[in-house]
Amino acid sequence: MVKPVKEAAVRNKVKIARIEKGNLTQGDLAKLVGVTRQTMNLIEAQKYNPTIRVCLLISKHLDCRLDELFWIEEEEL
Amino acid sequence: MVKPVKEAAVRNKVKIARIEKGNLTQGDLAKLVGVTRQTMNLIEAQKYNPTIRVCLLISKHLDCRLDELFWIEEEEL
DNA sequence: TAAAAATGTCAAATATATATTACAATGAAA
DNA sequence: TTTCATTGTAATATATATTTGACATTTTTA
Image (cartoon, rainbow over all chains, first blue to last red; front, side, top):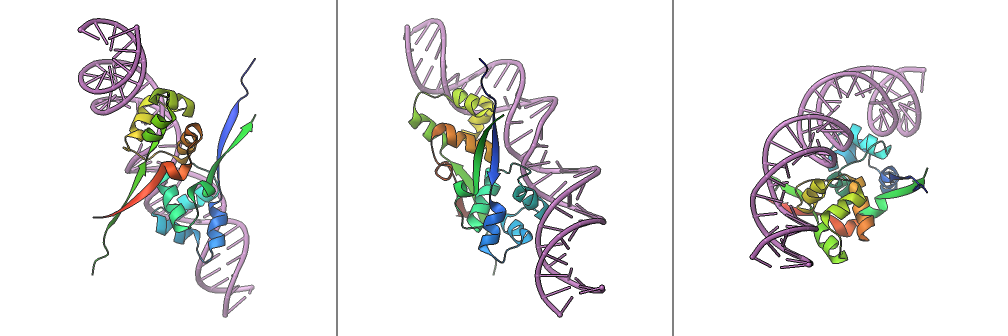
C-alpha cells in the first residue's frame, strides 16, 4: 500500500488579472511592485515561486485578492 | 517636497492560527508543509519572507485563508 | 520537583528567488 | 513595409530562503 504521490503545483492568474485591469504592461507592474520586468515575466509564466512579499504587492497593485491570484493545484501522479 | 518613504512590512498570524487550531506543534506543521522546524520557527517569528508555495501549504493545513494569514502593513517612516 | 517536549536561536552550507545585461520574437501603430 | 513598444528568454551574478546540526531556554506533563 503506497501513498499516492501528490504534486502541489502553484498556479497564478497574474497575467490575466493584469490584462483585465488594462493599460498596464509587465514593465509597469514590475516597477510598481519593485522587481525587474524579467522577474515579473517569469512569475506570469508560472516558472517560479515568488515570495509572499512580491505576491502581496502584486495583489495590491492589481486590486485582486491574494487567494484569487495564487492557488495550489493538487495533482495525483 | 520629498515623498514619504513607505516600508511595506509583511506580517502574518501563522503562530496564532496554528495555536487556535490546537494540538499542532511547529514541528508538526513544518512536516505537513515540507519544511524544517527552523524554517517554520522563523516564519512564525516573522523574520523572513517565505515563498508563496510554502504560504499556500500553511494556509491549507491550518484551514485559514491565505489573505487572512499574510498581509502587508504600510508604515510611514 | 524532575523529565520530556516544544521552542528560540546560532553557524555554516545549499538551493533558489531575483538582478543584470542582452537580444530575439511578437504585436501594434505609423 | 518600417518603427517602436512589449514580451519571451538566456547567461551569469547576487541576495536570501531553506537546510542541517546543534544547543540553550521555556513550557508542559508526569
